[in-house]
Image (cartoon, rainbow, N blue to C red; front, side):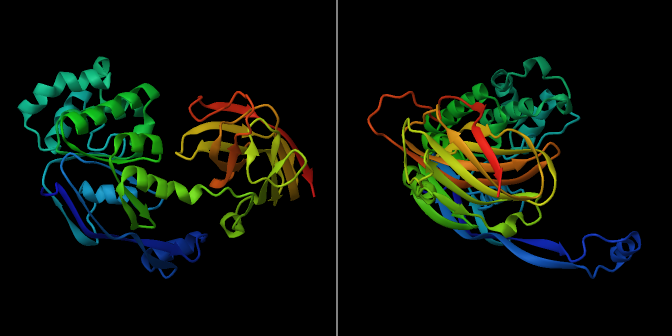
Length: 402
């Protein structure tokens, strides 16, 4: 069988500008406008020699960390930006949904945008007319179909954009993380439609998402990108496990790269996961008391200072956020201990995000900075799991100055 898409040694280079003196007087700024001696350039390769084939009817999941090159690859496949090296051979019409409102005009009505976008996709007017009612019905914006798109919310624009892309029968459907903009009900409809498109109608779907549950449910084949390089390809389950394995070993103490936070008002220096007596833990028994000890530094007076922790499953499903009591903080080194006495987690591993903020701003944010693991000790407990819904609550905490 001949591939519907051939990706051959695709590479993409961007130039990054660095200003040596970012803060200039007005006279210096005007001078540098005509002769710019203060800017240096750096080549950044977002993709390097990426090659794979996609066959008709396949559903391909492209996964990887932020900055791995996923969105750049999709923009090249959608012909939004050309590759620096390599080539792509496409044997079918491509519809892409990369950003809310891509290919739409804000001054035109929803009705006019359906015909405009369909024409861009290469559809004839009669084809669009035949599917028009289905598109509008699925999108749920029929009441506003003759309203200019600029008056739509981002969610309404997404509904219309997905409906056009899915119902106008392109041979290849490319979807980025944009579906996360929609509400839960519409996301469920979209997943159902993508399954119908790939399984029942035999069309090809390329899907990018950080939601491993959705990717594994929808996709049969997987592509893992790491730092712009194709790190793994094969069955979706195996590729997802390869990706998740990077997060599997729990880290009981995390030393942060302080240079990353050197310009922030406050930054963490270490994290420890402990039992109620302060002993380091590798795994936490379900139902047992446990605590997180965070050491951090504050450079200057910070009003209404908060520390927040976000809990995610290994499939990146966010389900809980906790935070400390807000306090006005003076400069110095501090330690906070957050204790968990009542809430029980289900058996398994979880990823933690850490953020510092004040009344005026977000100070610093570290995604997936450490992991925790809960083990079964045979007790009957009520467990909080990633599918239990999103929970916001404070955690018992004590901040002390060192």
